[in-house]
Image (cartoon, rainbow, N blue to C red; front, side):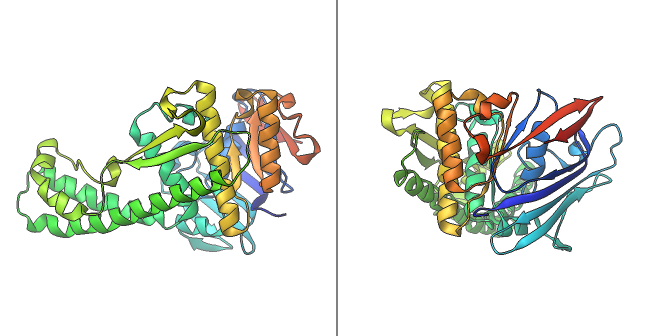
Length: 360
């Protein structure tokens, strides 16, 4: 098993899965079933084996199976970077989700130190034409895959910004109240920007070095410069107070993408080209991580095959197998995965009276 991999996964009261036990052998996995059967729920469960709120960005209380609402739990055997681990994550009684690694309580950040999980879901298809917030979130997920501690810098920045925004809304003018918060924002903001730029550099190198059937995308971080953020925040207090919020900083940055071969902004590309650019970036991220860490990340690709022609599907599966990555892919029809053949395993998901059932 050359890459990171889930070897066993158990779900309890997780969305449509009242109880499920799945076994994997490290190969790519085709998860086949009709719409609404619970395929994406399996991918969401695996995404929660990484820091954050998972591929749907759901709150812990949204995930529990209804109508029981008893809480939920995910247990996985994980072939990680340095060893095999048992990972558990759960939430109950309206509490925040908890994590346990090898029997010991752990932070979510610790999940990023034993494995990496990348995903591409249909909701991301509008990435290049939606508001900047979605692109920042995409960029920070990429960055987090390279630098698990990036989450801590983001949390520190956001906490200080919330406190500063509260002062602004209350029309506090005493500069002594702002100094420490703006210093914290400047320090965390500089780290956020440095992490983001380093991640983009790794993606650029991974695309430049690869022969691939998917188009190359040139990415540029645009927006506020965090280099002198502290003084800039102080100078901008009056304007921020009028708005009731902080108007400058890395939380206002954006990600610009260019289809390299056509020299065309991603927002002006066709829907199919935009999807191909996203796939290219996910594969580049995976290649870079594999080169850096010596193991390919786990990939979650929801309904990706349905948007590709036969040749592009075959090229995608070839690249996944060449990486040695365990990719969990969903589709409504088994024939979407014909070119994967014996290189992958297949699971079938069906709905039985509102409950998902999984079979080989």
